[in-house]
Length: 232
Image (tube, rainbow, N blue to C red; front, top):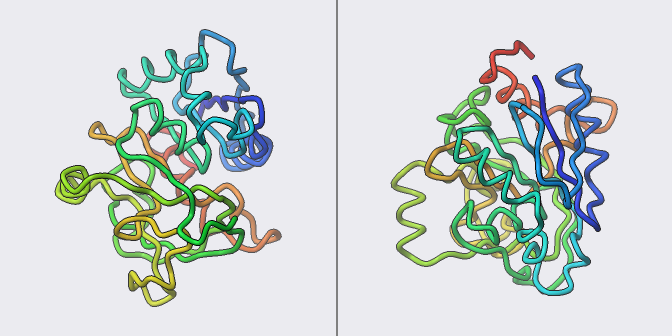
């Protein structure tokens, strides 16, 4: 599977993503600088986590207007898979590729710990290797992960089966205690209308190897590889 990781000033999870993609697909991804205008012909484009532009204006707002984002939007419109993790999720929202916005955590504190997620749809190239309703572990590390949208958008996301992941307890229940940031409806990840763009706040790339704590995040990347016609 061919992939590309977009790097912005302040990205700090790009190396983690590169390592995960290399380990799972056997092929190192291309790295694309934010000021570039073009992206190689790939099956997957990733916007990694970090603090693009230091979050000085609003998380993801400056990066969303970087030159490379025009190419990202064009590839997404052509059906190429686009994955935004943490800051990448924020950038996708700010760029209009996903609805809603990521705000300060309800606690107003940075949260860095492991959480449980429930896979709420398997109808996507990102989630097809899980079972609907499956509970997985995944680490989070963010200060602005509080997903918000208006009621009409929330109803549309739910009605179109576009809520990919929700924060839950280890039994799979959506509780306030299981929600690390106050996101509406415990949302941890959403899909676009075309189902080829996923934004997810937790970091699946950090849980792909038993030596580093487990493999719960591995199925996301294996799902994309399978959808691209590569047996992972």
